[in-house]
Image (cartoon, rainbow, N blue to C red):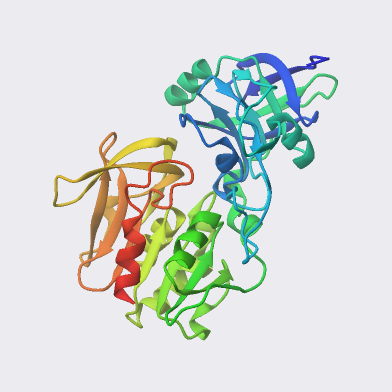
Length: 358
């Protein structure tokens, strides 16, 4: 880099980490979280579930394979990203690789961040930051760029409806098929759309607060999304009405939390969340363990599940809920991401299981 502009990551507990700016030269604030994923930064940065957050990446070398083309397929879905823009508010990395090498790369990570007006900081000890977040929990913070001072307090994104920020604003249809699936968009990742289209269904994507019960459909899917599920009461009421019809329901991530709330259970905020590609989950009642991709800060409280519901998956690291199912109706969900992108695809069979119930 020709010029190194100073930057500092400040945490609400008073700790500071000084480094250098890359990307957009503008200060930002948000909830500071960490991910231990070793690859997949183009997918992670465009995941709507990171809305409102500053992402600290523990893997030390970032940017070495650049950023791929922004082309879309026949349905207008990005071929390489998980949405049409970057959703993190800022990026924290250890070693930024300005030079990149990959057959599909068209630009550097820094140039991409500049285009999307997302600030970044490098040259800081991201593993030390991660240790602090693990010990103290995710916390508010800011990336302060030299010459543009910023101070606490800053707004807490978990006190805002992040789902409303990232959800689509109108009904969008994809694919062709005999079966119709309504997809409630709480911040859906593009690979979820791809997984359904590949399986030959007509997909009807609706905003988070849309009354989809006015639509004729064969199955209901509730997507992933950012922030606190408590802001989605209207979605929960729509799900509760859908449950009376008995048609198959499948949820992922935020969809797991909203399905649980529709069934009368509660959610809570995790200390520092699960954001990685290597989270082991066990299917309850079996010895089957799957390695999963995850990105969430809230979880279902197993103790509050009603008598008609039971856990479907359990996290092997901390025993938290990783999915639920109804004991007699075709309703189930996963807290992890079977669509991956990026991460392991061990559990993509859950899409097939849902389709088989239609």
